[in-house]
Length: 565
Image 1 (cartoon, rainbow, N blue to C red):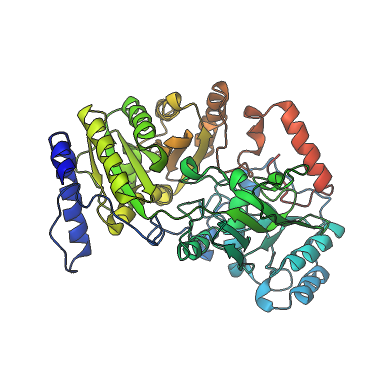
Image 2: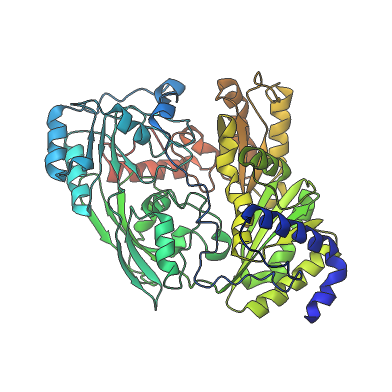
């Protein structure tokens, strides 16, 4: 191939690293038969027809904590002693439980800890996967239809019973677990795909459908769900919409605010909002559905969505680079946008510290032998493999020739695509290996994106909180995230949750972001963690309008109390 010789002089390092990556992959896959390593660019563009373009099948799914592990989690009410149970909410009685059992019929649809001992079964609904938040709920109801959700909410509203909507419970800010004894309304039984039009690409599905299930369903029909998360094997699409999840491909497909065409939801008084519009253009009045996208279940419960799903790309490439500075990262991103343009589907940033901790916790070997201060993962997706290959070769020749990128590898088959994506998607879970993680999801002007990580690390070091032994609560301070969206995930892995660490971080992090006109929540939402700090990103006028909306739709305040605003 002619372009191989053109690229060869400037890509000698890249080729050598890719060979090492291939050998490591061969060793991991032994004793399976393997073919000889092909030449560098000849097989760099792995075509993945009708296959998911992420590490969905091998990503570590986020599972709820076991009952034993959950019992070791401190109650949220103890971690936040300033929060007090609002006496306006009624206490659950056996009469209330009897109503829900009669309504839902199935024993498995009601987890009753009021009239019987169900503590072990309730723990996974009361606790979050980060082992940071834990509630006191004694009742979980699992409706199977929108009508059942309507009757549940009407009864709760009439009887002043507080509720918490819950999907896959993979959130990061405590929004999907109770604080006190709120009833958990879990939507896992509402998991039907209602319809799909392969001409328009519009999917209509229940809120309880698992994201990975929806994406696999679309994959069989040569389409893709326009959202991808590391937790896709556990999270539910209703929860994704309720938190306005961003994910790995917002750079290519945009946010859920643009892709959601319609919703079906239930208001606190039981009213069903039937707005499952399947039109891309509908300019008739207020766009009410937008209030539910990112509303975190505070004004109603989403029970179904209609969403525009793009055609799945036939050719996908993934590359993983090492870079020597954040300035080089910015240059690489600028060049990727300019040279890869319409086929660029992801540009992810990981600092060297996050990759080292991922390696330590997971035991997985990193693709590059040498260590670098920064790493980037880019993905291209298109319909013409030859066209994409030419563009990728030109990009790689340029960034290597200009010494923007120091070293890197390009996946040569679907297995290597999954392994490279694993180095990015495996970070959030494995950072919890030492005990816990303080997670901050932030939007920051891109030129200052990494400065917050450095300043936070310096602040905690000066306070004597970071060290290699158990006497220090903090393991390290790392940064990774979606470079294409200027979205930083500032993570502080800790050996134990410690108020001293929390006080050093908050409100310091939020003040730093506010001074730069950033957002304290880019994609994770507010939940209980960020409710007190919304003023760092929103004006008094905006907060007042939000509270008016909350009061209008939920005058009794039964929906997901103690959170959001």
